[in-house]
Amino acid sequence: MPASRIVIQDYAGVTVVTFSDRSILDTGTIDQLGRELYQLTDAQNKQKLVLDFCNVHFLSSHALGVLLTLNKKVAAIKGKMVMCSMKGELMQVFKITGLDKMFKFFPDDAAALDSFGVSVK
Image (tube, rainbow, N blue to C red):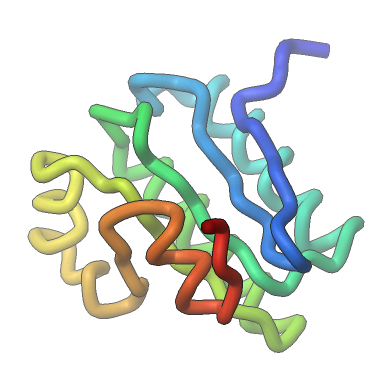
């Protein structure tokens, strides 16, 4: 099995997912990423997710589809998903596609965790 594409940490019931890859562009990477992310909701029933994009500089439209599917899976189990640490160029992709209206964005993981009522101080 290939190495994990994400690092997972739990803070008081909130799961923070940090992407390891700088670029999320090729189909193999995205498919593996999708499987790992969907496990969080499908098998582990994680309802509070923070997706941390601090390492990511490039994202394909196929990866956006994975994020949309994950958002639907989280909503189906009455959860909430937010994103943080998104670089300007990456944020532009969400704005151009109109997805900036579908997701909540925070400047960093501390602010994202705070949105769930969790303080990391």
